[in-house]
Image (cartoon, rainbow over all chains, first blue to last red; front, side):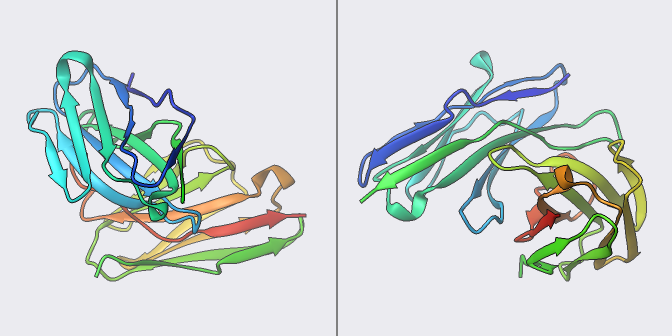
Length: 117
Length: 114
């Protein structure tokens, strides 16, 4: 069965600090996909990134970067020079390619990030 | 345009009422989803439609009845709800029902059952 663990329930940082959100996953499938979503107070989940199990390249997008390590089943997310607008709940999620037709997202419990000015 | 719209934004209903939530997308996506999210919890999948046919029903009580009239529209009909059904109801869509396609979410409907 698939499972996503986000051990950090809440993180508080001061603006301009770097912060890393941890995500550990479990799956028996060899083909799977990992996602990060941001949920600001407005409620809408915003897609940030997708990573497939065959691509361990790290990715950087502006102040955001992601570190995918299959050896430790982790897909961590780092925000560099955090800003108040980064305050939100961040969800890591997993979907497996099989069984066919199922393909639902399994979410972690989320990490609430508060960036203080 | 990666927009999923949901109406209404807020809904208060009594336990004997019948109401409907509406979700719309014009991205040409063929998979649409309903999620329920309680405070400080992740979204929980309720239903998935693929090409306007119900593909997944996560054992949701029959007081929730989904409907997909066309590829752009998804409804959730509510009847005889309980106070514990109060939650944020999120709609999402993806290009296809495939594991590698990201889902795009609407802003949600905050439902309060009194």
